[in-house]
Image (cartoon, rainbow, N blue to C red):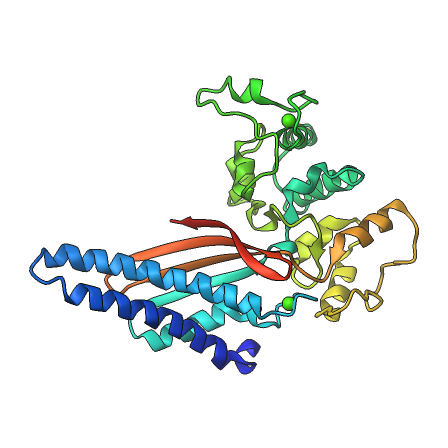
Length: 321
Ligand SMILES: [Ca+2]
Ligand SMILES: [Ca+2]
C-alpha cells in the first residue's frame, strides 16, 4: 500500500472524475426516456454504465502512463499502484465497482522474439527453460517439436523446417492459415501445432505459461518487474541467489547493474553478451485489464495493450468481453 502514500489522491481523483463525468451523461439521458419499457431500459443503462466505468479505467491508465517517467519503469511508480487506486476510486462511487490491473509486459517473455536473428539459440533455450522451471509435463521431443512449429508460425516463409506451415493447418477439421508473422496476442500460441491448453493454463500438477509470456515487447526483460521465474529463464547463471540480489537492488533507475551480486558482467562470453543485451530497466508495452460492475450484477471487462511510442502511451489492442 505504499503507493497510496505518494501522490495517490491525485490519481484516485482522476479515476473518480472520469467515471462520474461519464455517469452523469448516462443518467440525464435515461431520465428523459420514461414511458418505454423501464426494465429493459434499466438493464441497458446498467450494462452501458458498466462499460463506461471500464472505459474510464482505460483512459485513466493512459493518463497515468502519459505522466510517467519513461527512463525507467518500476512497481513503486504510480502505474504500479493502479489496482489500489481502482479500489480507492470505487469507494467514492457508492455502488458501482471499478477494479483493474496495469502490468508491465516487459516483465514477461516475448514469443515474437523467438526468431530474432543472432539470438534465436538463446531465445529457444529461454522458452524451454520456462517449461522446465514450471515443471510442465512435456518430453524433450515434444518441446522441440513445439519450438520448431512456433518458428514456422512466426517466420514469413512457408517452408517447413521441422515444424508446420499452412499445409498442415489447412488440413485440420477446422482449418486456418499459418500466421507467417508476429502474434497479436499471447493466446495465439494455442493455435500452434503441439501446443496444448494445459501447457498454457496449467493443471492441478503444474502452473501454465500464461502469465509468463507476452508479445510485442521486443524481447527485453525489465529487471524491475520480472517475476523470479522469468528472471531464471534468461540464463542458467540466474540462480536463486542472483535473483534475490536483483530484487534487493530494485528499483533500477539507471542501466547500472553493478549492484547485482553473483553475476560477472565483465565476462565476454556469448552467454553474458546475450544477458547484457536482453536485460533492461524499462518497458515499451503495458497491459491493462479492467472490470466495471453495477449493483444489479451488470458488468463488463476490457483488456487493452498500451505501447509506448515516442514516450507516449498508445492503445494498440482493445477488446471488450
Ligand atoms: Ca516509469
Ligand atoms: Ca512460416
